[in-house]
Length: 283
Ligand SMILES: Nc1ncnc2c1ncn2[C@@H]1O[C@H](COP(=O)(O)OP(=O)(O)OP(=O)(O)O)[C@@H](O)[C@H]1O
Ligand SMILES: O=P(O)(O)OC[C@H]1O[C@H](OP(=O)(O)OP(=O)(O)O)[C@H](O)[C@@H]1O
Ligand SMILES: [Mg+2]
Image (cartoon, rainbow, N blue to C red):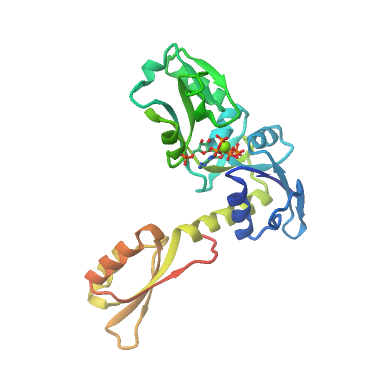
């Protein structure tokens, strides 16, 4: 039975459970507070743990795999590896300071840097030869400068609105681009059957979220031009229409370029262009 760690709180918790549900697994109901949940039909068991602790459990081998943030994995310093990025809870991890006061990493020398990610930040500063004091805080790091215990913050930035509200501005390159990731212990030569199935199912959810199915008709003389616009995963399905002069094409297309692709297809002579969402898939 595969043991899977799932965040029990915070930004990762709900989307992680939703993704597992979409992948066909049993999950806690709304407001559910179970710490352990068996899913015997799928031969897996879920452990709901603090997102920060998940790498520790996976690294120790007491659970087989887990969902956590890339930033939390790196901050844990634990020997666990990223198996697959999961495409949600995307953010950057950045330095920020009062707007205009500190504008380069070099200027962080001798300053106090507040963060909840001491290891990640400490490693980054050391790698870049910056000598600064790291001040550990559990959260609401953005208030630390105003309250006088730090000069700089290093924190998760999604929209940037929390930073702006605190009068802070980012500087330097992002320390990291993070998102939710599936992690496992390193060096598993042969992934277990359970992990292979979980991974394939999660990949199916990702593809179903990122792609649509596009159908259209195109005159045969423009078929090659149209197919070049929608090459699909392997190769599009092409079927003859009854009148013999047109073909019907079916192909997977990235959701974010759907309208651009439809415009291009129309321009090369395609008509009756239909888009359908994908409910589930295995690729
Ligand atoms: N606003 C956000 N947008 C995207 N990801 C975020 C955001 N805030 C936190 N995360 C991600 O969530 C993970 C941290 O989870 P954690 O539960 O420790 O904190 P949290 O989501 O901020 O929850 P809370 O602070 O309410 O306990 C990290 O991987 C981080 O990148
Ligand atoms: O760029 P934004 O869209 O503003 O999002 C980023 C903020 O979201 C998270 O904070 P959270 O609300 O989880 O509070 P915390 O600092 O206590 O973790 C994170 O720590 C940042 O503060
Ligand atoms: Mg938070």
